[in-house]
Length: 217
Image (cartoon, rainbow, N blue to C red; front, side, top):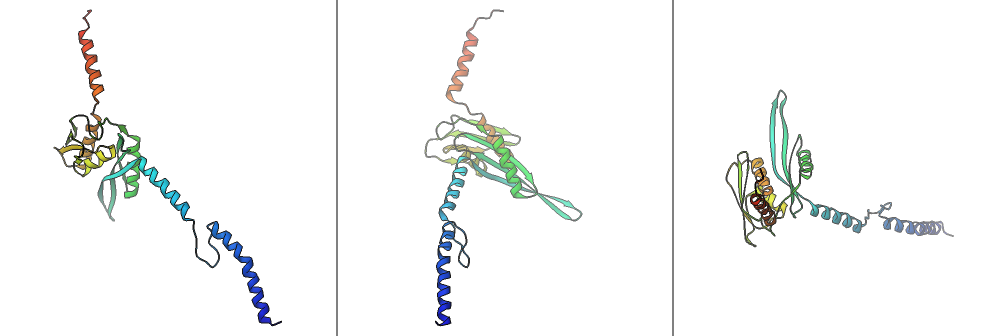
């Protein structure tokens, strides 16, 4: 027998022995020796869908990032302040502020703070039930209900807060300071002042009953 033929037969037997092992490794998503890395695509898609559903439950948006510089002997040290709004687009909303030496850390702190301070607001469909004015320091924001299809007529800061709250049709006007923090907090205060029709009628009925009772003193 030719030694070359014996060498070929030995190599073919080795390839036959290795082939099922490589197939099993490919099925498991393990990188085979001497081949390309094959990963299960359906597992990645599953994780991506989970991340999407998580973000659909709570919407968080960075409204404003402020940079502050401190002059020291060696140069300048920068710190960042982030203002974030968090909402579920169904009536729950919160605003938070965070400060750190990095933007990512500041946003993370602000998001955690906003989630702890979430409050429920009153809506009338896709708009607000009545006209309201919110004030905070120099900030003053006016809001009026609008008919369906009007959209959100507002600036960038007020629009972000209203979108997170789930309001789609409203007319707004900023009447005071342009400071992003004051405008955001004035908008948040205005939303907390909203009351439903049943709450107002119940309050008026209670006041009428108390006024009609005879004075026993």
